[in-house]
Image (cartoon, helix red, strand yellow):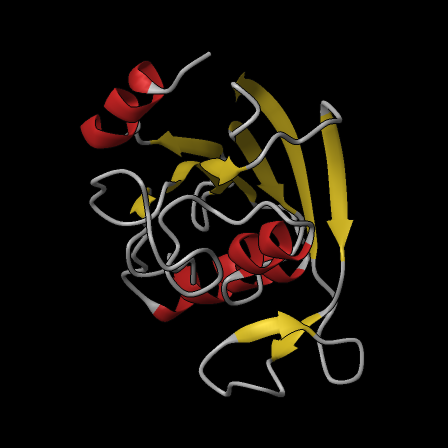
Length: 171
């Protein structure tokens, strides 16, 4: 139901039966699931928050990649908020997904000129830091429990290499 890309860290949810799967799939479809991600992106995002509302579909140039695709893409919305800026070279952000397309945050941030640090598919091929994947982390996942109807929220702390990088980046 809620998958994260390879080289992305964070919260995962596994459904144990068809009813749970159906319930969570419906919540995803209705955009009622809370999905909050944390990322370090290239460049200085000037505004404190914003929204990328651009359809995502297969790239017409590379079938293995996704891209902004106004012709064949599906509706996709990512809200972001700046948490900290690092010397004009990097920005630490929080992203809230309204929709859930494949590689959505990665494609949206790259489309506005701020690819995810360490993303070898949508960002620069060379990374100036030794990372264990890209700096994209599924930090919070919240949904209504399929059986009890109770709202539940799960969080995962940033991995150590991510925290260490945040401490090292020049302010």
